[in-house]
Amino acid sequence: MTTPNLTPKLYGVCDLRIYKMLTDVAGQAPTYDPVGIDMPGVSAISVANEAKIVEGKGDERVLEIEVTDDSSKVTFEMLYTPLPAMVVINGGDLDTTTDTDAATYYSPGPSDLGEYFKIEALTKSRKEKLIIHKNKGRLYPDGLKGSQFNSPAYVGTAIHTTGDILGKPRRFALVQANYAEVLGGTAQVETATVVGTVTTAGNATVTVTAAGLTGSPKAVSVAVALTDSAAVVAQKIREGLGLDTAITTMFTVGGTGVLVTLTAKTAVANDATMNIAIANGTCVGLTAAPTSANTTTGQAPA
Image 1 (cartoon, rainbow, N blue to C red):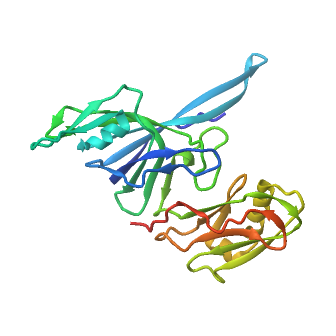
Image 2 (image 1 turned 30 degrees about the vertical axis):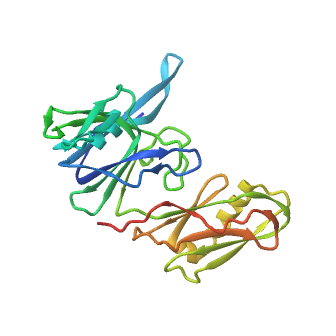
Image 3 (image 1 turned 135 degrees about the horizontal axis):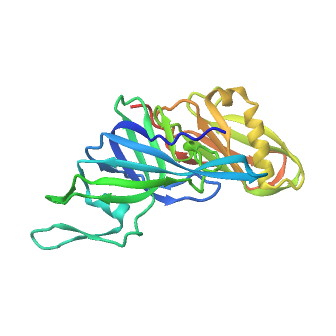
């Protein structure tokens, strides 16, 4: 059996920001505060897998070894920390005085009251983006410098998300793609939700709209059967879209359960026109869903 490589990966980065996690629901993409907090002076970030090794023994010998990386240790240092970042990571509150000498004060919270957050950073070549989902840890500052915490070090853990990243469910042991993705920019993800149960068999109509898509808005007919549930219809829609070469040239078709996702194969600026509409064609029973959700905003490489 091969012993897992636990050597930390060190990334040279610049322009590191954190985003407070808002939701993390099974079957959906995690959501974050759209306004990030800049962490000044970060030059590198270390990510090390914290693997668990479980040995199956019998007949006085090891029969099998199971290795799972349930989390990763994440560390970085910075020049100073803005007070809002201390609130997200360490917990606590900000209080602003209302007198003529207005000032903002940070009140520390208990050690376990920090928020989950996402880390985004550009590599120093500015050709890739490092995204680390669902972090929690502590900042350890070295005193104060003016109104900021001086030379703090962050030590924390990235764990698996409950929701999906890029349309893929996280059902088993954590894998690196669950909390760290190195991408040239950010690929846009659009998510449609199927609602209803088929009461008359026929075809559902799925209309995909996107800039650059041949035939946009492109209508795809999907055969559905009597009593098909929303999840069954969603699976048939995923299969139907996956057979359309115009769609698969631009997008990866995905999703689980009642969700249908299209993930752009090329990271470009966000396409506000992108949409997946679902409606009854000749079938009956589905609830019309004319508007999909832009679950990941597209961003061109820096």
